[in-house]
Amino acid sequence: MVKIHPFKGIRPTDTLSDKIATLPYDVLNSAEARELGQDNPYSYLHIDKAEIDLPEDLSPYDDQVYAKAAENLKAFLQKQWLIQEDTPALYLYELTMNGRAQTGLVTCTSIDDYTEGTIKKHEFTRPEKEVDRIRHIEACDANTSPIFLTYRSQNDIQQIMDTWKQKHAPVYDFISFHEVAHKVWVIDDAALIEKLVTTFAAEVPALYIADGHHRTESAVKVGKKFKDAHPETGTDEEVNFFLSVIFPKEELEILDYNRVVNVPITDDFFERLGKNFTFVKTTDGKPTQPKSFGLYLNKQWYELTAKPHILSDDPVDGLDVSLLQNHVFADIFDIQDVRTDKRIDFVGGIRGMAELEKLVDSGQWTAAFAVYPTTMDDLLNVADAGKIMPPKSTWFEPKLLSGLFLHDLETKS
Image 1 (cartoon, helix red, strand yellow):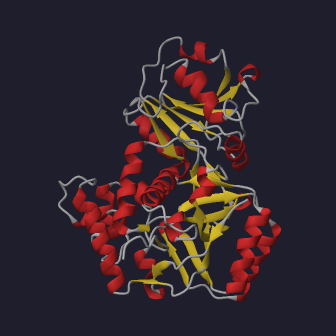
Image 2: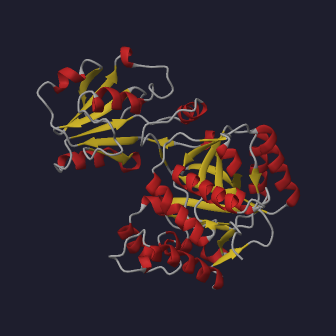
């Protein structure tokens, strides 16, 4: 069962939450972060992507960047732009986008739960991305960004969260990027915190990483490294836990994660495509049901439908993204490894079908493929089977903002 851990959160003072909170580090490049943070001294990007305060020609992975992140975090605390709770607490974080709300419990989760498989993953990670966050966590001595987790909803937990929201005012309430509304409540009732801890332990058999595999691996490796060097570390010390926001899977929505390719289209392309898919011309490429796809080529949309003989009951091979990868990209275009092949790129569904048309019509890409979204049940089934999804299978919106919560690892005096 799952262990959750209240913590002395580091968070913005109530009047600065909307100025400090920002998009997560991994959806912005250095230039975008510099532009976003340059006129806002409160922006959390000064901590999360501290290269914006250093010369532009400096590598974002230079030692100076991590030192600057630690320096800026210390300054934010000294100026009381960020404050730390006096006693351990839990938090509720509600995001509302286009009228749909989702509320997560902000807590710390156990490194042991991850290593023992109680917190389940569905993606591989890249070592170079892990190293960046490991260095950032160690420099700041804190989990500086939360992991986005999910679980199968439990009525007792949901009732506790709903009741707290109804009876208490949020400490933060603001609208930010993409017109998403953000609200945060502090749960500071010791008895209720203990009830949530015991209910998770009794009723939640597993958590699942929705987004943040690299952050998870980095946090876990930092904790394990410290404990290996300090075997006297107690089991309840902060370094044993990492910052997470846990949402019931019923409240989450996965958007489509579409593909563009830059490949020659041979004369026999549609003949080869027809072996595994039916296709008809259409005016709108957005798929309306599973196992169907949109293809945009030469200013024309086509609706593709997978033929029965390529369908699979396997939790990975049966995914829409797998059908497209195995029977179009690999078979027809010889794109075998989408992580490294420069002939393919990925476009989040929030950018819409018009973005796919724009990319192809520009001549930069030959064709675009629109994919029906992966479902939450797909994600959980793959993780339960101990398998890995193809890259770029899920796109979650809205994004959790960074800077609202930090977790002090307390490894430095």
